[in-house]
Image 1: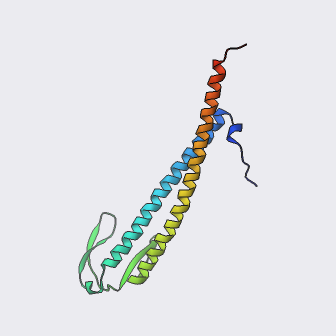
Image 2: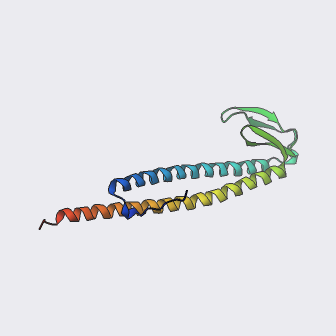
Image 3: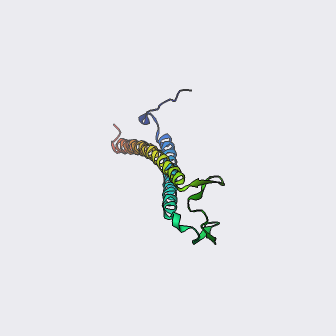
Length: 152
């Protein structure tokens, strides 16, 4: 089914209010999604930095291993050439440090592309929202001017 376009100027005030409400919700949702993607990208970058910190000469060193976001246990680095990374939904994979950094670099790049697309969508929706508000203001102004003119 083809999408049908409606001119904002053809809508009455209550219809414009509904369009504005929908656009407000969409912009809010997209902005929240943008923030979540930025957090994911920051997490991936942090993982890359953490992997770079583990040097081959670190074998036998003690460090704190996170079990949850607030629970850490002591552990020893037994194989600094390999790391175990979280690939999502509870799955972990053993990779070389180089492979892990490449994995996270790809993730950062992928998220960046999505952030750029999402930013364009947000800007488009904000432009639509501004157009809607402008038409609503014009309608209100025209209505006020109609009320001010005396009946002849």
